[in-house]
Length: 64
Image (tube, rainbow, N blue to C red; front, side, top):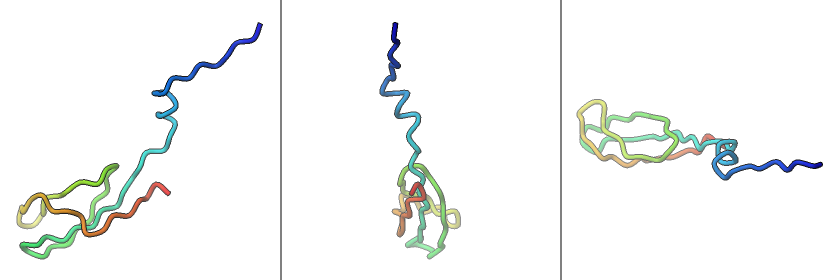
């Protein structure tokens, strides 16, 4: 008797490498430049002056 391997979508997705991004920001208010890494592209808050919702100037996909 043969048995078949059953894989769910969730288990195969768990085997896929996650996306990891290097994000470079520049604050339009105080001109501070900083870098961060996330698994998604997100807007950031300036660590110097607190200005918020700043879009990254550069996104590098580190998953490749």
